[in-house]
Length: 157
Image (cartoon, rainbow, N blue to C red; front, side, top):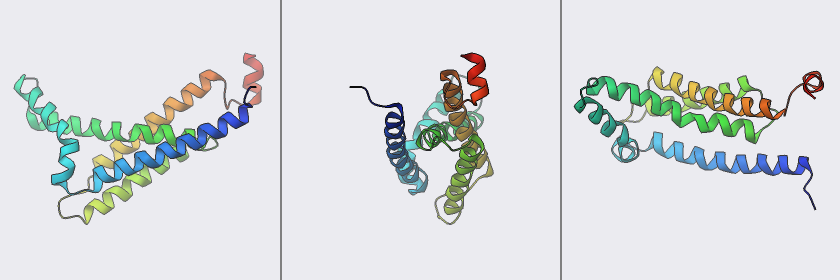
């Protein structure tokens, strides 16, 4: 017996919500633990930056800065993915706004922590990551023909 598409969609949305909660807990621990503890998670950036500097590609500072930006982008890609999967009616710009607001909250809390400091570049990188994740879902749904307006479906059917 096959499962109706609406039931599959609801099950997928519930699964995405559960994954989102778990992922947000991971992000929270990563960004709000004291720097000495979270560096065990984020220390990979420093290791790779050192390798790049030792290879003579660029300075350690420049490599660390670029890798930090890329890590912040990557950290929020799953948020963009999961937001659109968890709430299918959410528009792309709404998902990106939610990601940006989450980043602002993170940076604001970091501003009152003694071992952390907020940066605008983190907010921008996190927002970009959310956008990339949301665009991936939107593109896949577009290719699958899900969520297209009725007129577009008629033209491609």
